[in-house]
Length: 102
Image (cartoon, rainbow, N blue to C red):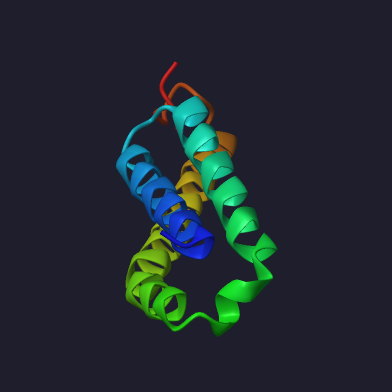
């Protein structure tokens, strides 16, 4: 398997892990999965030849919906967390649930 395809597979797996933990309230797991995505994306960017390999371009094109869905999910969850934090700030911790479990 070419290096570019292996890097894309790692990126795909990292996004799958991120999607799995986004529904949890475990901030540490979300951070670990986010860091894995960041490292995998950096690995893909570091392979300059991937832009000219048709197999890699095809695989990346197939991954675009997954990447977009993860990006949108992260933005929605960040907005939701911001709203909950605003509730906490406005009403105090007694009347609003915690954003993340402890």
